[in-house]
Length: 129
Image (cartoon, rainbow, N blue to C red; front, side):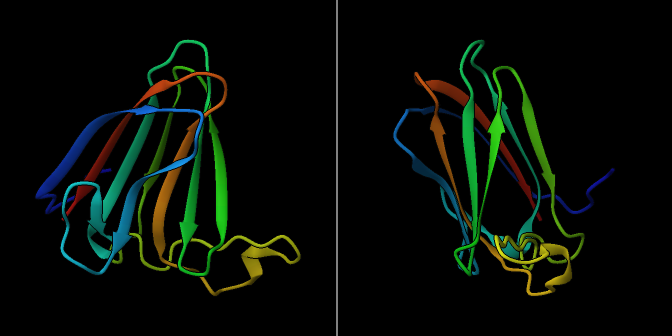
């Protein structure tokens, strides 16, 4: 897939410890280091650079819904956003009901990460319009 009008990329390698911490935030405000305009983000890729340990990535939306993804050693996770809305109204998570039937999708507000047993390097690549 080609993403037209990409005018900003952020590529960072972060050391992820065993203590969960926020690695990126998303809002309607102006972008700065580690902070992204949710509506402008078109593509995100996370790569666990470690050869042994996994990293847990936790995505949170404006309703405090969370989705946790296990990113095993040497693996990548990609998220291509909504074509026109970026990370606005992109996911819902629910424990008690069918998430697919609930159309109340929320805006991504932050991403947290923690390593399972030892610190790991994580490559984070985010492209925005």
